[in-house]
Image (cartoon, rainbow, N blue to C red; front, side):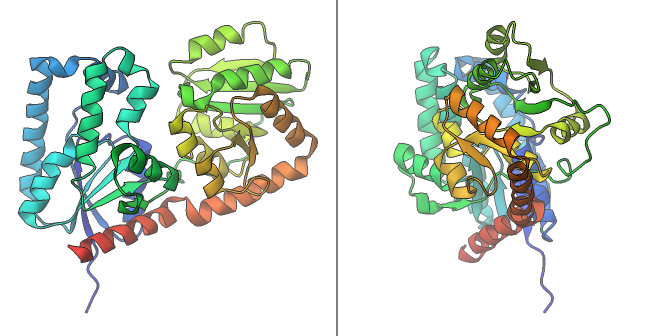
Length: 381
């Protein structure tokens, strides 16, 4: 009997452009899964969600938007006629899970939620509880309840699953682990450009949020200001960028660049001698292995990042990447000098890190890991 591909309905108001959702859907497709998207846009970006938590949820306009979005989503869903094997709620889906649970019960199909990150924790790390204690308290309750509805939960690391068990009382055993990984359609090795600087280039890129610890990077740059052959390039934008630029004023070895297109970002990575991960000490930072780490490993670049339980469970210091103490500019500066003085070490890290990425964290192996969890959920229903 010929095997029939698993049919997965990706359901909800998830961020369809977000890397996590793109990676997992494409990973499934590369493993022969039929992925059917049943999606409707609800949010207009991060600031929209922040304003909602701060009090926007009280407005009639917000609830009208909710009703309109879910009415459109239901129309899309009814057109499917239940022609799928597993219903998956993408990230973020704290609201979507409630409707998805009713629909999966109706069609007697398993429900899986890729929770990926706690939006309650994100709200805390952004300090939203100081602006709207009630909004964040309701968000915690919403997430607590939502976690109890699916047949299977998905998260990226065991450390994050343990946090959910501690904070929301959800047994860590209920989580299937699918790492963040990177999209190898966008991040792949390219040669250095003709304009590559002769100076030893250290690259950070990202959203300048507290868990990245950009202040530590700038302070390390200040410690290395007398090393004339070293330069730092910081790409991106976010809440901590203005403070970082003010802190870096007068430093001759640091350059700030705005967000670039994917091709240009890939070239910046290729032209860097060392790529930086994250150095913050927030729970979110410690419990995850950030996209930028996987992306730079995909290009075969040596990566230096802060120590933490999640990264230690995933990679080995001195083999796949280089680790240093977090929130410690001197430790970061010492690590950079150690890599600059030992090119063979950096080359070895890049080669072994890239091999680990290809074997475990590129689209095909990530999709295979995800598929195994979905198949198990399908069989148990």
